[in-house]
Length: 369
Image (cartoon, one colour):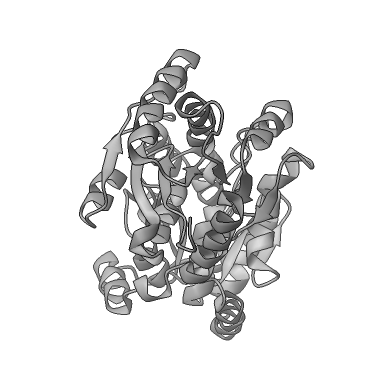
């Protein structure tokens, strides 16, 4: 590479609004423009439009999750690799890593371009995950949690995603709070409408919360998830059954920083599925709340505790009584909310996108040698 930074082709598993997609977009903003050889998205969606507005060359290679779909995607990505000739591939997510690892060998069987797998979750661990890790030049896990299932397979490094501190518009948060037109404090869950994200958990404890904070409002924020249709209707029906419809706002996608900034407490009650999937691989919402100084309450599941580092209130997964108790306590005590928020801001001071980008640039340089 003659001393120059490695040229990297970024491959994204998904393009819908979500944490891993936001992490990738922020990384591309923070990295030197000469680093990006282009972006390949394995599905069309808002991320593609977002990146194209930044003059980045973006190619869509529609790739389904079936074996045949993954194979077709790998063949098409191999063509792109031969044209772009990057020094390295950054694979954002499991599907991107699977397709990139195969495509690299199809494009140059004798000397495949190395792949850095940015692992955001625990959806591929065990034997298959370890096999994929060995095929990659390195695995950059967004937390220790997402790397644990790989054992000692391959080269591994924890790279916590950064949070764009300058992305927060206090005026926008204030306007949003005014538009809500609610009489009392606000507690919020943010995430796509997947049952594992825990919108339903906050709804279930809301009557208990209202017993101590009768003017509180719960915001259930997030876009519909195509893999879990009907969740919005289920939440609305359950709110009616619980008699709390008037104290619930079921919103679609909103800028998370704006919503968090307008909240008094952020709730992260992640409830994994029976197979263990759905655990928070990092918890970007919790990290954004730290940056904004908004207290976090949640279940001690996945990487949430790793992110908070003691700067929040966590109870065992499924402990609804404990969840309600912690929320009530914070809503009743503004001084405690302020103190917890201040500790969170201090912890978040090093959670910058620039730091994350530099860690990855250093890793790229080592892997591409």
